[in-house]
Length: 156
Image 1: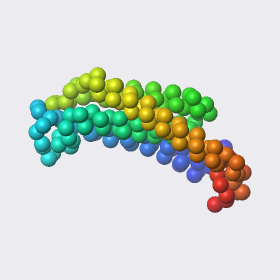
Image 2: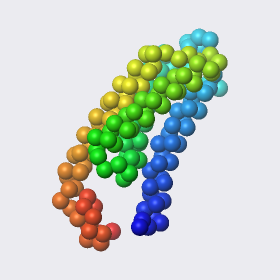
Image 3: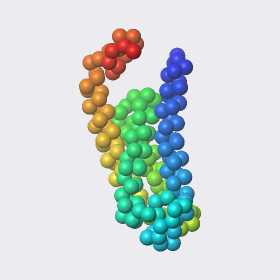
Image 4: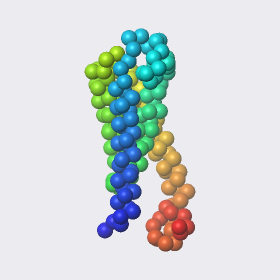
């Protein structure tokens, strides 16, 4: 049976990527301008050039896949299945967000944005997988004195 703090931590791990996905949705819901070169103070991102806006899809979806993977770690044992699940969810969400933008005035949906989303998912997944593996190998030998669980150095 899981304790109340473990359940709260599990809920937090799920809420973080959901909140981030909501932020992406909100940001993509702002109407665009008829010309991306026009600045509008009430429309976030309009001061960014189109290539920079496209490039920002990479870290946006890289972070999303990392958050999703992190949230799935306690629920799915297989690291490969964690990576595949997080990647599919992030890529699917990116495609759905582009579909959503078709209905936002002044915004457009483009395949290049989907490609940038996928690049972000791939890079973010690789970086998260690499850093997780490094962290696990560094802490694999440590066992908590209080819980006896591997991966926790020392007691708290």
